Image 1 (tube, one colour):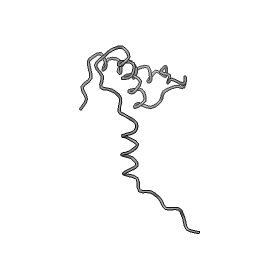
Image 2: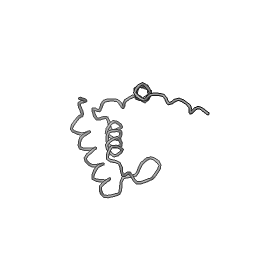
Image 3: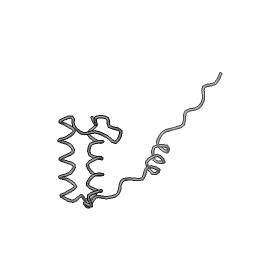
Image 4: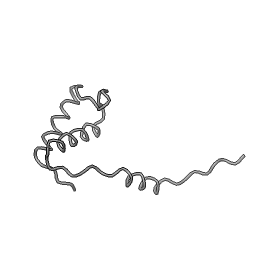
Length: 78
């Protein structure tokens, strides 16, 4: 389990309150409705402020794991 600093936890808590009030916006300016997206925004902001937060996961590793799990579908025969 990853270790987060108290400041990072407080930042995530602030962001969650913003989301629940409908004030949290994503980078594109749209309202955030996903709990997971709100947490990711909070951790990102905490990271920018210099809090102790593990680095974000690499996207390529997640894509490779998903590709291994999902069986490939064969094209339908005609």
